[in-house]
Length: 124
Image 1 (cartoon, rainbow, N blue to C red):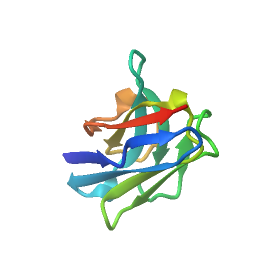
Image 2 (image 1 turned 60 degrees about the vertical axis):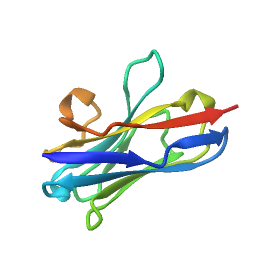
Image 3 (image 1 turned 30 degrees about the vertical axis):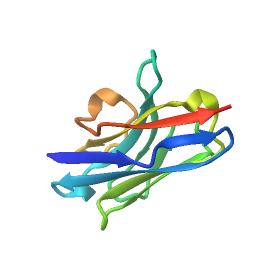
């Protein structure tokens, strides 16, 4: 198993930036594909970004492509989400997720491990 703890959320003005972190503990971090999802109040959870086990392959939702960057530091057991040019409609709880397989995938049902989430609020 792997345990995930997100941090870095907060309140930011539209157009601003935030960097989320997700610290992992447990089994070998580098054996997990990692992803970020978000869930706004009253809406379904949606995919944001994912990164391969080695970090050499990334995958983004169309809505964040070019503004968000996912990265990982396997030596630090941490995955990051740099978010730039944030929009009010991106206010949500952001979740880190892990799956112990090679394939980088955007379906939340294929991720077995989840953090507790961190709130991101973008004011207009």
